[in-house]
Length: 356
Ligand code: HEM
Ligand SMILES: *[C@@H]1O[C@H](CO)[C@@H](O)[C@H](O)[C@H]1NC(C)=O
Ligand SMILES: *[C@@H]1O[C@H](CO)[C@@H](O)[C@H](O)[C@H]1NC(C)=O
Ligand SMILES: *[C@@H]1O[C@H](CO)[C@@H](O)[C@H](O)[C@H]1NC(C)=O
Ligand SMILES: *[C@@H]1O[C@H](CO)[C@@H](O)[C@H](O)[C@H]1NC(C)=O
Ligand SMILES: *[C@@H]1O[C@H](CO)[C@@H](O)[C@H](O)[C@H]1NC(C)=O
Ligand SMILES: *[C@@H]1O[C@H](CO)[C@@H](O)[C@H](O)[C@H]1NC(C)=O
Ligand SMILES: *[C@@H]1O[C@H](CO)[C@@H](O)[C@H](O)[C@H]1NC(C)=O
Ligand SMILES: *[C@@H]1O[C@H](CO)[C@@H](O)[C@H](O)[C@H]1NC(C)=O
Ligand SMILES: *[C@@H]1O[C@H](CO)[C@@H](O)[C@H](O)[C@H]1NC(C)=O
Ligand SMILES: *[C@@H]1O[C@H](CO)[C@@H](O)[C@H](O)[C@H]1NC(C)=O
Ligand SMILES: *[C@@H]1O[C@H](CO)[C@@H](O)[C@H](O)[C@H]1NC(C)=O
Image: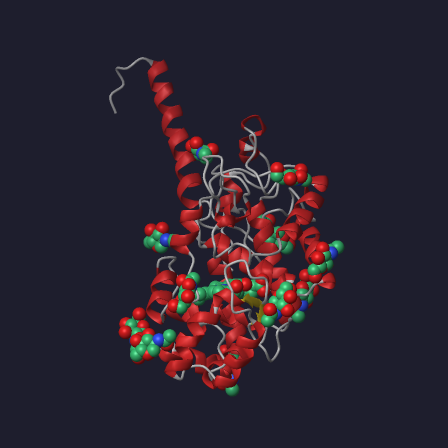
């Protein structure tokens, strides 16, 4: 190296190189970690679990709502809690207002209750995106009698656009090919798409999501006529996006996260056209048969796929912010960027990669 430059320029170069070396790993290698809040907010996960358990005791359907909230968060701008924003600082309609989310998404008040409890205990530390991931896990625990560790350390985004939701969320009229492509765009395989669709073993659906498309299925012989008659009786003829009438997606065991969803499909009892598509396509039909035959197999794959979904395009390290109120981005003055210097989010911790 040439040593003719002044020592102050040399020192400046060293600082610059050191800075680049410190920043690059933070930007490119920061990873989610199990136990991310071990020291910065040790009761974070317990507080989320308590909020979810309380809401579930009052209304067991909330578990389905929270699992779907996490999915709809992760598929749109990554798992950054953008789905929770009620205002887009850049103006225009939010994800929440998009028809796939409005009025069907539920569980917002549970996230708010968890966040309020956590802010009282450890202010400005736990992101709304992580709360959503924990709440989905706890919902799986309550309905499916299984548990998994959630890698955490997500940071919240500051943008929420209706158009992004419309572009990225799969819809009930999608063909198998459309579903496979939509999940591939998120680096999820066709099998993982079938695995995660098993979430439809719990929860409900609004008439507008199935009524009209199922009339075409009736003509095609791909829905049980008795089932469609039941649905026609349940739904007003004037059904539209805001019609409140709903039905359980899995009529057999609507509050249990089991493999009955896969058993209903070959009986022409899949509720949505998109559900039915899984048995009409040669790529996905064998997955449906395998999960119908072996619930343990499905649950193992479900847990892995949920963890993988929770990693989609996450903000980590100094990216994004820890929102103080999950419905709105932080005011410019309340920046939480300082947290990259605090335990729980520093670079060396972020480099201790959890393997699960
Ligand atoms: C494969 C593509 C998917 C499509 C087309 C789809 C579509 C739908 C539709 C139309 C509803 C009913 C909404 C309503 O009208 O109330 C619904 C509900 C639901 N979805 Fe999906 N979904 C898909 C994948 C997933 C995934 C990957 C998950 C979770 C990991 C999921 C979890 C749920 C849950 C839990 C409900 C019930 C929500 C509640 O009861 O509040 N879905 N889905
Ligand atoms: C948090 O603690 C758990 C249990 O001791 C451990 O498995 C995990 O690796 C810890 N995570 C971090 C980031 O310290
Ligand atoms: C209980 O659930 C009902 C809906 O089933 C909801 O309207 C009500 O706000 C919930 N109450 C509490 C305290 O969560
Ligand atoms: C969102 O945050 C990024 C940086 O994190 C910033 O560049 C951008 O201006 C912010 N956008 C809005 C709408 O606040
Ligand atoms: C549900 O989660 C709790 C911890 O939150 C755990 O102790 C329990 O074992 C889980 N249930 C099952 C069946 O794994
Ligand atoms: C099944 O999906 C695959 C992948 O999108 C596609 O190539 C194939 O044509 C589909 N088959 C049928 C029968 O729809
Ligand atoms: C999918 O993987 C590619 C290659 O690793 C990456 O560039 C892309 O950002 C990933 N997309 C998502 C949605 O995670
Ligand atoms: C699905 O298809 C039905 C029947 O063609 C149509 O009435 C409905 O608007 C479509 N729904 C969506 C979300 O595209
Ligand atoms: C009905 O069958 C035709 C021909 O196989 C197919 O193109 C169409 O997508 C099917 N529609 C529904 C709603 O199943
Ligand atoms: C649909 O929901 C409305 C409002 O709850 C209710 O009055 C009606 O009886 C329900 N069923 C039908 C078929 O309209
Ligand atoms: C079901 O799947 C589990 C988990 O992969 C496996 O250990 C078990 O042998 C399978 N059971 C049968 C009957 O194939
Ligand atoms: C969060 O922001 C929303 C929207 O401005 C507001 O209605 C709500 O009261 C706030 N919650 C808390 C706990 O401050």
